[in-house]
Image (cartoon, rainbow, N blue to C red; front, side, top):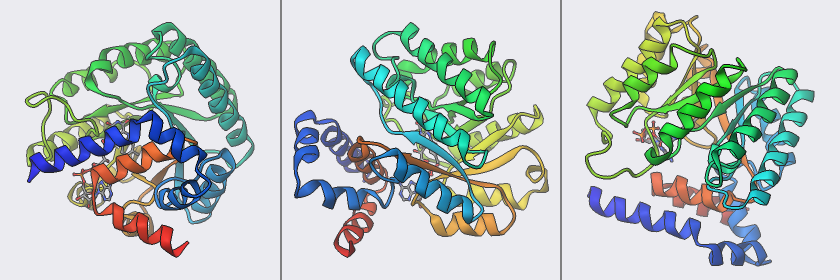
Length: 311
Ligand code: FDA
């Protein structure tokens, strides 16, 4: 039932954030390689080079790609600056390869949990470097307590750069209004997701047909406004709706799916001629990412374990 599913997801997310456990996994010569191998079902690896390697493999198969250096809620200025430097290295590396890799990031990874100005300065530096390299940045959306700040920072950066997109969560009741606002400024891609965060009861729209129709309504608003939109979901009915309606073909609509999830569907959609982008992550926080994917969809634990044993 949904209560115990929620309890399971919450427990896993606490495990993911447990600092002692994180230290232990990092230092354990025994567990690190086994768990990393399991995580590689969903994560490119622990270092940038692995991210680039997987990106090239996907590129050769005809997918577009997004790359993220995993992290969130960084709590010291030094760590935020280190994250900024790693993103800078990522942009530098992507500027040399084939064009088109999108860089994704959480603002709380580069400073939002310390100081808004710090995250803005870091965002500005990355947007400027990406602009020169002809690359696009897309800001992820975090829990609802941060929505106002994230939207405000996106609005400010959009006044200076055209290459910064934003993610919006269909599950929040406020999002239709936020979308109307976002459509009035900037020109970056709008990525629509259902929403991954466990919000308070009554503060979000649960997975349902109502949520599906809201999701499609948001995509339609972007299409009508002529704005580039990323349909970031693995929900087959939504994706079939996109590919069956001519209105979405030729418009600036693409499908974006997480690496390792519903790869069968991603391939079908790509082979059917729809642009499909795969969202790839890498970094030393792969353990956090693995726990999130399992919390979202518990059967993933079997896939991860099988991969680890096979490896
Ligand atoms: P839903 O959760 O209804 O799942 C539909 C079907 O997809 C499931 O029945 C299952 O078959 C499959 N599926 C979904 N998740 C799976 C998993 N983990 N493993 C295996 N199968 C799975 N969220 C957020 O709050 N802020 C953000 O910035 C982002 N960014 C982002 C970028 C991209 C490219 C994607 C694809 C997703 C995000 N998300 C996100 C996550 C998003 O909000 C959502 O939690 C996940 O996409 C899962 O929801 P679906 O839309 O797939 O639908």
